[in-house]
Length: 402
Image (cartoon, rainbow, N blue to C red):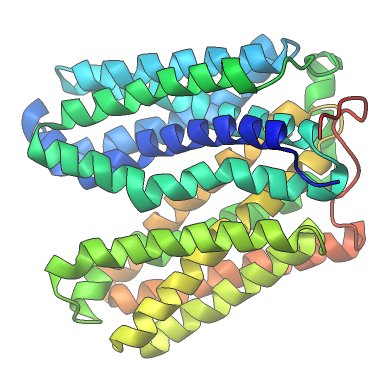
């Protein structure tokens, strides 16, 4: 049973939401000096705005479980988009450091929750064999955000102001709301298993193995990728003026990896796809450490790494969803918490490498260790929980529209 045209439109509307959410998260990284100058703070202090967003992501998942877990899924998506619009509109209007901190925290709250609910909706709309493919279509918005959305907002910020850029980010929320209302069907809420029931799945080692693999895998990648610009200009000796093209290539890798993962999901289990791509990432990071001074090798391996980064995203999301019986909404949202924690951990240990004399090349070697640990965790999960690797059935077998 393939994905029908009406279902594809539903997935496209959800994908537009992930595009907007990721533009909200990543746009600030390219305009941080402008934000710091406007608000009269140092760049290190402005970095707290990124941390505030990450804290919002981590807080949003349990808050959603506490407040709206039994509401109809489409209603939850619409409420999350309203919160998204409010957070980014306040970001555009922030006049001082503390207001900006609050705005970024608010903007981060719907991030993990939106990905989680969108994954559940995508899973419900298709036959079991196409669940990972459906989720990869939803996640495609995140890859497009990195390929085109973030550069577009950066260009607007430099041509006009960063406030205009975040006004655009907030405005995408209106388009997402229109798409959800037009194309996403009304679906009943999750079965109410009680507050304790929502967290009961965490008693099993399975979701913790997946979460640990997510943190280690993303940590490994971002240990190196957080410093990709100085690596490319200082080690590979690529001219700074060419970095826009380099980042576009990285974004293209994300798009390709996500698309490949979706196609492979029809034939292979999520655990097999995630484990294989995680292993490839670890090996590629070792090669970056060894051959990063070659432009051809560095650029090709960067493409492979970013492809693997987003290639494992949808399978890991589905593994966690399949291991969260009774608490699917929390489980699906926790994947995004894991991704963000991995980003923070990786950037931290990469910074240690740079400051302790390991240099930017050392970030790739440390990252390879993290990625290898993620591979071993996924291997352990697959061996312990079977070849099916988390394909335990639909979240709600009674709802199919494909």
